[in-house]
Image 1 (tube, rainbow, N blue to C red):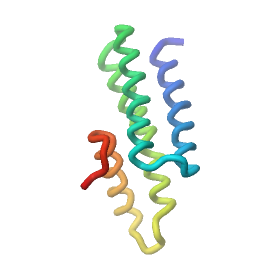
Image 2 (tube, rainbow, N blue to C red):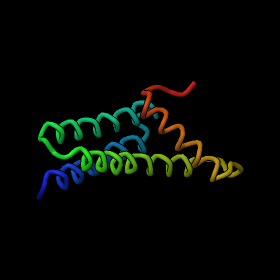
Image 3 (cartoon, rainbow, N blue to C red):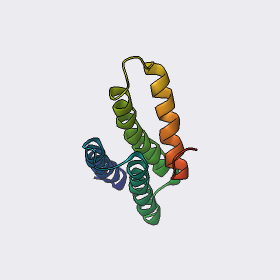
Length: 108
């Protein structure tokens, strides 16, 4: 098994476990999303230290980030009020997730 395959499988398993912890109500949005970012950053730093190609690392980062974002958005949609527009909640949740991921703080 190559290092990319191993790193992706490990990352997916850790991310799923982290999301399950979040879904059970043990973490708020900020802690959850920043923890997910730390997981991805740690994996990418390890791969860089092993001399793996940057383009492969970037692809893995993008895949893992999307793997983090999708269940977060799904949980936002599942917890929306019936009168709230699904498309609007999805778009707002994506923006919210991306902001916290990039800035490691809540939007103002």
